[in-house]
Image (cartoon, rainbow, N blue to C red; front, side):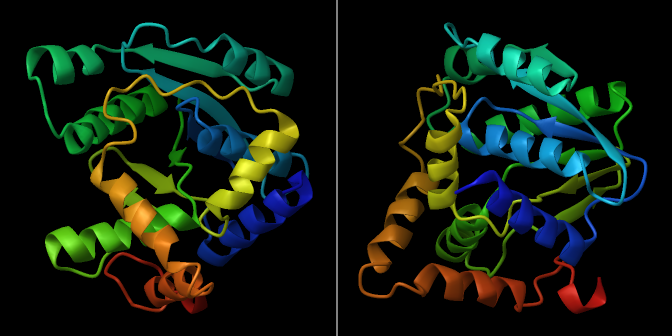
Length: 242
């Protein structure tokens, strides 16, 4: 996927769901993975021509795992003239050393989001951008359906009452396979995920389940995505109302 295509899909989601307004200061959550670095490229590119003027501030919540090198990400942010803040935490030590969690993902996500939101506030941001893409939307729905018995997925825009921040997900129209292509084409400085649970989660199971459907039904993922968009899930804005 070329940058122009990424910018087009990202702008479409931003316009459809009114994700960005004039004067926004957006904290971009950077994990060091391909998704968050692609989001950084997208928002930096849109800053150059989007009619509503906004600023971005890249933030990484470092979980404290050894060998997690963010120097290449820092260099990229410097090249983009984007301020970059790294928040050091002991989340990894708490989950795997102290609590010895066997299913740490939910608690880890909660702690990471709390640290990211606090950092966003400290940096004067009013919005936080997550790098969730179309596959994430579908996989979250299947996780909720299979493990919670409800039809749900996260919204492209969510206001957090306790913090006054708005979470936005500008890449929900972008396929993960296109992000892989973008990473390869632009040689993104991806940092290896140091989490011991990486690749052994329920989400990984659902990802494989979704991909197993595609050889027999190429439209399966897109059909599920459209079902979510049109499913009137609580908290999910209607495109026609935006």
